[in-house]
Image (cartoon, rainbow, N blue to C red; front, side, top):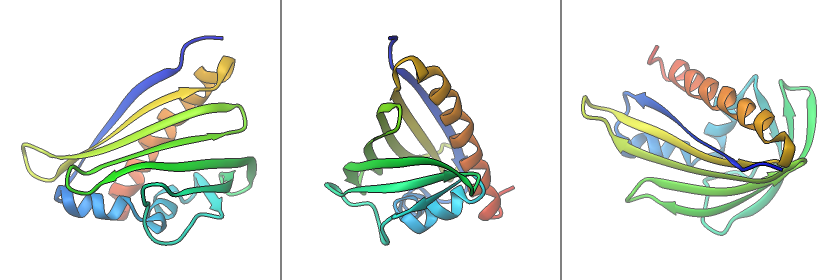
Length: 148
């Protein structure tokens, strides 16, 4: 059925690494950054916590339901600024997402999304969708923060 797709998307931000990481672990920030792309029914309040497991109903573009999505927060390390999750739903058997935030040599930080996606024969479709989604999420965050 093919191998899982693995890829990395990076984006530089003006915020210092700790401030940026503290923002992106909040579920309300995720909702705001995804506005217009996806909405989540059942997203918890507060921040991502290790061991947290929940299901959300996702609608793309605010109206296209894609069903239930299970999210398990595997790791959150504020000192090293790492957030890892395992997600699945629909045709997606495995969506492993690791976020790391590191200092940028010119100031600010670099946000790195490392993904491994396995959706069987639909892996290429989901990987392409994820690349577009994460790239736009970064562009929207930059716009919301007034960095562009």
